[in-house]
Amino acid sequence: MRAALTLLVFLLAPILVARAETQPIVFQSTETPPFWSASLSNNGVGGSMLRLMSEAAGIPYSIDYLPVKRFRTSEASFIVGDPDIITSKTQRTVIPIGLFRLAFFYYKPHHPIMNFQGMRALRGNTMGVLRGTLEDKQIFLRNGITIEESDSNESLLRKLKRERLDFCIMVAGAGRHAIKKEFPNETENFAEYIVPDSQRPIAIMIDTSQAHGKALAKRYRNVLAATVHSRAYYEILEKHYGKNNVRDTYFTELFSFVKSYDDALISQ
Image (cartoon, rainbow, N blue to C red):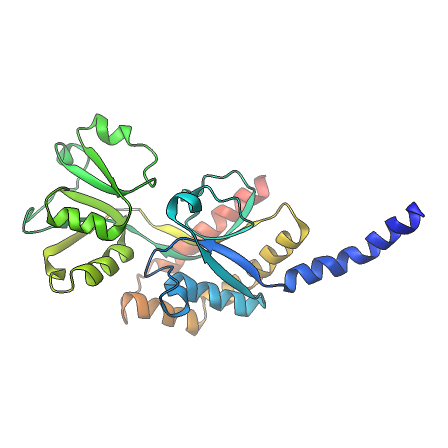
């Protein structure tokens, strides 16, 4: 009897894995417009990239949005966003599908010009950050930079205007989006400085401790190059950055992240 059950499980295993692969999966993310948001068409820029990838891979899905704090500690099997802010130890395959950069923002009526060339230049200033996103506060505090946390990009911008902050650090595209939303008649009063070498991946993250997770990750990875080099993908970039404004180095930077995560997976 036991031998028969073992044989049955062996025979059904491929069917069960295949069925798991075709069931809609639920990605977790956090509201970061214009990259991820339930209120935007196709869930935003990152959502549009995920949709294009998922259609190419034949994988149905939905997105569940969590507050930042819960998102950072999530142990969900499927996550989309920035791999660096996830603190759980779940083993995941990371598949970069896009890029974002960080920027310092400040309010020009209070600071016509700010010097961001090193910590010393910023001594005595107060920097705003989203709550829970700054790993090492001490390096700033040791250099005489006060840290103040807020729960939203809009809150950071309001504090800049009220002179409670001297500058803040945000995802560049998210900062611009929040300025247009919160202060549509004052966009010229807010200045940004792109943090050098701050590009980070927008990524699909899949728990590979189970067979169907490995299979789904492989399907996404197999369609990555063709999808990213498609006209439809480039149109997503042009819609976000503006026509003819996509950086020449964008695809080189993206596939550098792809290789680094591939190498990390191989070394595990």
